[in-house]
Length: 81
Image 1 (cartoon, rainbow, N blue to C red):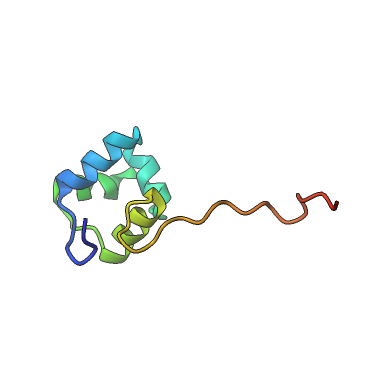
Image 2: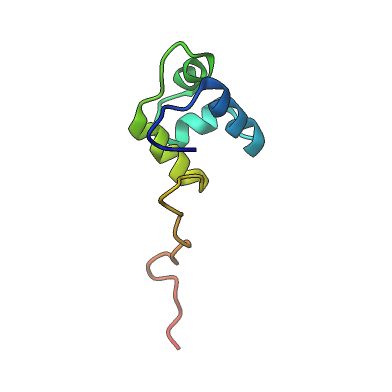
């Protein structure tokens, strides 16, 4: 999906369902307080902010230009050789 265009409510819902996530989990992923706003996005009541959608796509690994980096070990978790 092009990041130049806002996603449809159907796209947001399809991605969420495909990943087996709740609306509250999606909301938390993009720093929303709860799933109420996410529900509004999926119902088409309120359009998702482009930056929030881009963050969502990046975190899901579905952004056209960015791929999530491999997780780095936590500081202090590496054992010296």
